[in-house]
Length: 309
Ligand code: OGA
Ligand code: MN
Image (tube, rainbow, N blue to C red; front, top):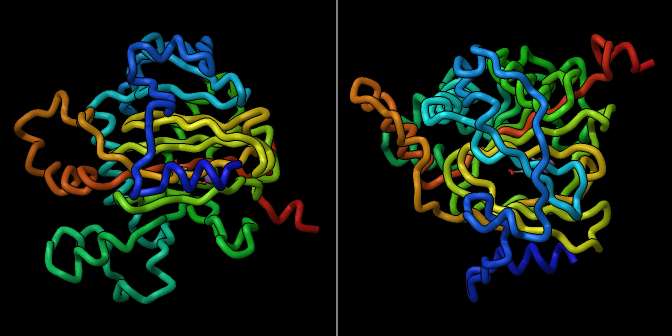
């Protein structure tokens, strides 16, 4: 079932009918039988705006009825906040020595070469490198082969990202969440992410957080087996999705990226910062960034070595 739907949404020829994709930007979507509005619990604090978030009383949260624990908060970020995080992802979260990139294995970057700095040169090689970056890992580095985290593959986790996750999790009802690992996924208009579950984390009672920026994803959320029928949801720039409870171990994937008609990161832009923003804007005009954050340790656990024996 999952595969069939994935193929359907991925198809270029013929293109899929997108009218069943749940769209949180659509004024009518609250009537959608699969969507339930859920209350948030967080309190408003001044600090939220320092991290690019709107006051919590402006956030709304929805749950997909077939998938309890799968929540979407449509765009809790200010436009300034979206630009801040897009810049962090492209310029900082790809920077050595604390990040690992898919490019590392192929020797595409020379020793000490900075990916984003190279991308800003706009020559043939740099445009090739720009397209080639598919992921960066932070904190406990996700091991794509063994799927096992290790204390020996750990770097400091960005504190601003951990703080945003903490505010979101407090508001959703997971006050003890601790952000310890992240995958930053980079998608182009022809990229997909096939169906999978994220089960490498010890404590799956901790939610998985996902932040989307740039172009829109069609996100497929299935059940605990590939036989369950998935729901399709749009994830737009600025949206936060949370996989918790029963949905935490569900199959999911991204069969398609679609060009958006609006650029929410444009608002509130002042002339002074416009020039610095241009290279980042160029990137997100035809790409999508997804920051996927996980808790690796159990509550109170300090490091992985303490459970290794
Ligand atoms: C992942 C993931 C989904 C997305 O990184 O594990 O499922 O929306 N990403 O990009
Ligand atoms: Mn995943």
